[in-house]
Image (tube, rainbow, N blue to C red; front, side, top):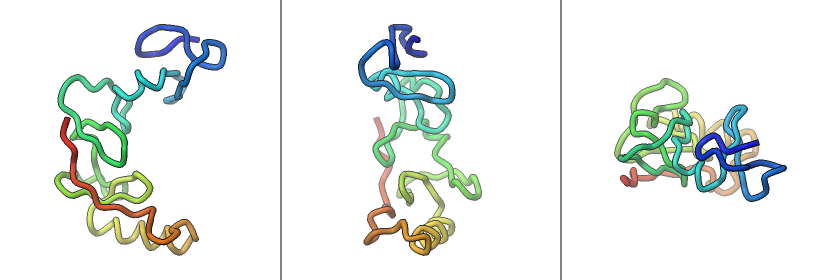
Length: 112
């Protein structure tokens, strides 16, 4: 199997660290150059949120699909608008997934 980005050998038979996106394999270094949401290549300007790279237009509330910018709230890396971030945090806490609030964060876009 080969990396969908660079074409070099990748995956269990190709060695090295790799990730999957759908049915495609990527070297870790190649995957970092792709949008966390849509998987498309990041050409020039992109933002970093929750340790992942995104097209600015792809950072949208996971519940209502509202475009987000500036200070973004996320629960375990999933972005939400202010209203839905509180709901997501409550669901996380009720399910036992929130261990001391570490799953909830408020980040500024880190423009690259």
